[in-house]
Amino acid sequence: MRRFIAILLLTIVCATSAVAQQNPFPLPAIPASLTTPEERANYLALHFWDNFPADDTTLIGKRDVVELSFANFLSIMPVVTTHQAAFDNFLRRMECSDEMYDAMLDVAERYLFSPFSPMYDEELYIFVLQAVLQSDYLPDIEKEYFRYQLSTAMKNRVGKVATNLKLITADGRRQQLHKIESDYTILCLSDPQCGDCNDVKRAMHLSPLLNALIDEERLTILYVCVSDNREEWMASSVPQKWINAFDDKGLIRTDQAYDTATIPALYLLDREHRVIKKNSTVRGIEAWLKESVAL
Image (cartoon, rainbow, N blue to C red):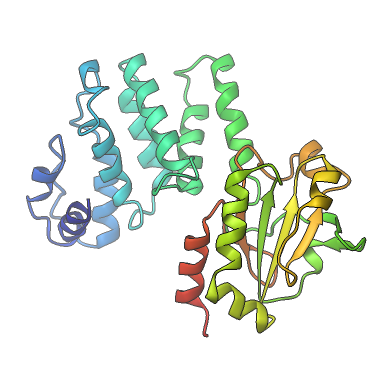
């Protein structure tokens, strides 16, 4: 995969023929008249699937063809500026077969919408969903699932201000997310009965980087119980310097202000409470902080 990305980026600049050898099907030749990396990347993204045999349903079970092709397609997205057109064309190319269309949507969802995927990217998945919903290929009733996914993906997007939360803390104080004044906030939505939540809590507690930033008052960890069981929350504990909070008004659950389909859910916010990382991991947050914050 890394070799493919390196070769592909070189192709964007130099139009080498080596890319075709790395992809399971022939890629289009980029016109010599397109000279800037952006122009070449946009052309390649738009025409990436032109030679893909979408009517050959025997390919659906072959991960080295279908999934590798999609992963290669995603690898050029950081250079592309015409994302919607690229994903529109991607799905339009699959419309010759219901089976292939469904299979590619499944791959896109697993790669881009699952927080457990190493290629997780909700912003790209939004382009997939918009392509599905703008197309007449699926009947309207079958689009309901994708409408719901789009409404979920549009909540608390990267670069946007996170929805404010009004909570109660373990010591009885009222706490609002937007009242936190540290440079960074980690918002963790959790449940005392969730084993993965406890693993994330332990990883954050043992992180030298996070603890150093907390000690310097540059980072706040807001650990929010989204369960409706207040007794379980009161019986649980978090490190002393964290804010241990409970959604006593049930707004997260009833108003669906945040997606809690998968917990724990980790968000990294800046001083203005804009989302930097959404549905991230402890390692992902640590990596961003190491690269972006002067220690």
